[in-house]
Image (cartoon, rainbow, N blue to C red; front, side, top):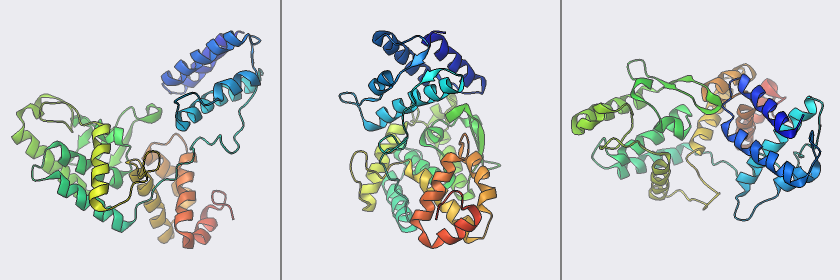
Length: 315
C-alpha cells in the first residue's frame, strides 16, 4: 500500500469509532506530501521524515509543534500495530503533549475576588455583554465546562426548570448532560428574562448568550473580560503562555471536586470514570492528570489518595 492508502485506512478506522478527525486528516495530507517530497519507501514512515515533521518551524508556537508531534506519533503507532515499518516519536522530555504550562488552580479567596470583580465590571445592565461574560465565568467554574461549550449553548440546550444543560458535539464529538447549581441557574433565569424584555431580537434567534443585535458571545470576548477581571481582582497574570487562563477554571473545578471527595472518604478510584464522563473526557487519562495535580497542591491528601488510587499517584 502507498502511504496515502495507509493514511486513508487510518482515518477510516478513527472515524468508525465516532471521531470527526477532520483536523487530523488535513495534517495527514501534509505528512503524505512530505513523504513524497523526501522520496521515502511507499509503505514506510522513516525516522528522517518523522524528525523533519517534528522540527519547530519559524514563528510556530511550541504548543502547535507538540500537537504535530502527537499527530505523527499516533499515525506511526497505528502503522506499527498494522505491521508496517514506522518510527515512533519518543515520549521523553520535550515531547510532552501538555508542554511546560502549569495550570493555575484558584484558591477559594481568589475565586471570591475574581467573581466579585467580574460583577463590578458587569455594571447595572443584567443582559449586557459584560454581564453575560461575568455569568459565563461562574458557569465555567461551577460546572467544569469548556469555554467554547458554554458560549455555544443554544436555547434548546438550556433547561432551567430542571437545571440541566445539554452540551452537543463537544470535543471527541460527544454529547453530555451537565447539571447546574441552583444559584447559577437562578442567575441564568434572571439574564434570560431581562434579555427578553430589553432586547426584542433575543427571541428571534436560538443562541442563549448573545449581543442585543443577535451576534453570539465569543470565547475571545470572554477571555478578554477574564483578563480584565483578574486585573480588577489583583490576581497576577504571568504574561503570554503563563496564565492564569480561562481554561484553568475547569482545572480548578476538577481539583476541588477531587479534594472534596477525598475529604469525604469517597472511593476516588470508583468515581474517576464518573468525573471523566461528566467533563466530557474520552477516557480517564485526562482525569487522572487532575488527580495528580490535586495531590501536588494538597500534600496532606497524598496518603489518603494513595490508599484509594495508588496506581495514579506514585509514592
